[in-house]
Length: 557
Image (cartoon, rainbow, N blue to C red; front, side):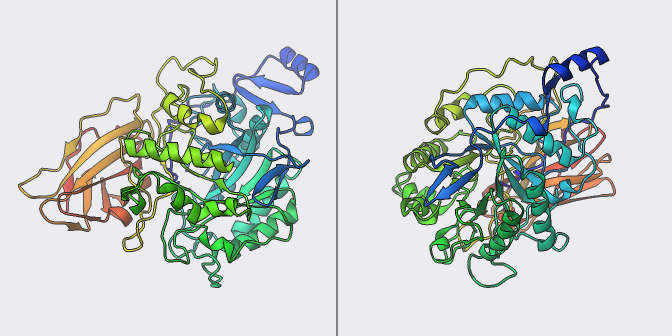
């Protein structure tokens, strides 16, 4: 998704290294190879517990284990390593092992781990509580990735690495940008393939998250042909580790002139499959979301939700039904707050189960602005309604409470801005959203939100209102609702005073800048034009060491 979008800052704390007494450490080292230290598990790579599935391969439309048994990947995304924190979100509130234990208890087999190339090159992380994760103190992002994989392995989970963004600021339509070349993209993938080639915990690589915009499939233009680029990168990865699954997402604009979700269109695979140097390694991975993310035309059809099966089959389900290749539905998620969304999820779960399609739910994190997560804002309480809805494909009942780890005695930093699901794309005649606006309030925060403040309305005039979603000592997340008056607004901007703001880490539905003590945001993509009498809800994550604005005066132009 839009990491969604997916960005979350967290409270910065002074980290101290907590050590066991030397005598205890010696005993632990002799007795076992696993050392549990205040919620963080260290696993010696040379004595790692084998992942439950081991290396996987494909056969027709089926993913199989090495000995040929059919296997369904049941994954969930735990995002954060693609954001400015360069670490999984929530580690300001829970231990890494506690999160892994809970994910395993829900019935998932796999972690989809988003990252950015910028974080791979980074030297530090943020948003990690040292008292809950002492083993992560002072680690580089790559070393944190090592720790995530080790913890997954220790809890019987496997990992799919997901190149979610080139940098930590925003997603890219293509697999390269002016700052991050195709060669850098491939080189980083080769580096990761080599780093984990002796560890079957890492079963696959999701080459690039949500190709969209000008990205095409099999069009022959090297600068935008995603299928050709996936072939180049896939072959380079397999040269480093021939055991990996190569996960290839779709595109937004398909050859049949039908637009769908970012990364969601695979209708052209039948004519232009990705063929790699090592056979039986390609898994295709569309994304799909409900009407609360974006009102795709099929949601308003007279035969909704029965029509959804036809939509999915045309875009990607045919690959399984015709035994062409396996599919892993790489993202799907919802706040589950509307009847339309509930119908969508029920129908989708049935479709996945009937066709034995692998999946990766978005997301474990509660701080995904437009979908929420599988746990509450405390990062512990299971979201029972969602887990019950997923039970037919998870294969077990959802637990009624979190793992037996003590809950924090005081509120943890509020969750950062959404790393939201990839924006849905509108019908071809309208611009594709860069990141769907949350259809419902962002996750609640321990910090009480101020009542919405509004730009002063006049009869028939446009208005803007502000809702503080969460705040911590390094920033805040806020939502703005902009409503057009009696005439449509074709372009708009809103600004407010914030003397403490130093920058904007993430925004959805608008672009933002900070200058002279003011934050100014301009409507963009799907939120740029607002029909008369209609509204859009957009948001941002601001970097600010001072107090978050509670009820700022908004200037709407």
